[in-house]
Image (tube, rainbow, N blue to C red; front, side, top):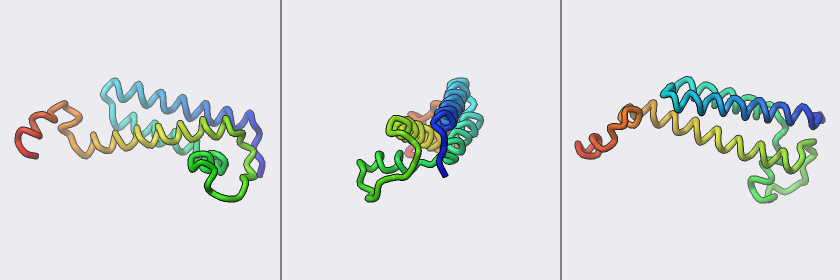
Amino acid sequence: MSQSTSHIDSRIAEAAALREEGNALWHAGNVTGAMQKYHYCLNYLNGLDRSKALNSAFGGGLGAESSSSMSAEQGEKWRALFVAANLNLAAGLVKVRRPALRTGAVGAMRASGA
């Protein structure tokens, strides 16, 4: 099923806005709220046909040409946002699972041998 260019652009823009909201929450110290926004960002991106984006992420090495209606530029935007949101989400998971990172007590953890 073909997706219109304007639909793809608007979905990418909505996902980017969600990531920016997550970044604002992160900087305000609301890690779980930020993680939720990053998750929503990824949900928006996952609603798009991303075969071209994935193909470009692997240097075109996935074989067959994509039948996606996503342009190469849109694919690159999708890939960059997808990678960034996943890295943001991973950083949040590290902070949630290692509370000392959240409080800035990493030096204390290292000094105690933890």
